[in-house]
Length: 114
Image (cartoon, rainbow, N blue to C red; front, side, top):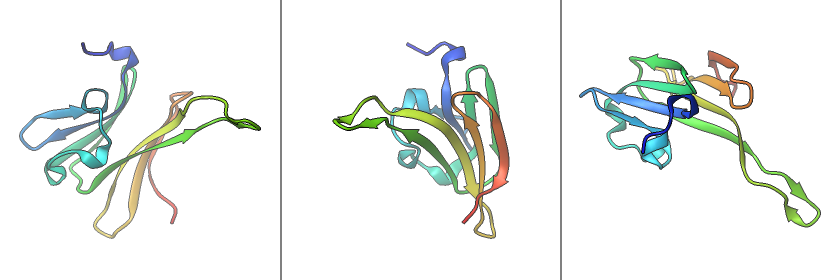
């Protein structure tokens, strides 16, 4: 069953042959995508909103998560705080595009520090 578009959050990629793989159906980390050298577009989805990075090489995706700890150990589940897609440019710089998971605020693309 496919998720309602208003609930979709995460990355999706489009390949040179036109095929698409989305995080919410793939069920594995971005690093396990097949034929990564053939990806032509990477997108980030937050419900019905979406943003794309096109025509680059060496794409990646990241998540920032938090877990609440207390004196007796873990008090809650992992919570995704932000999702990022990006690519390494020809000069070896890391270019990112990030969406805050709680607010939907988008930032980027921007040059990552360090």
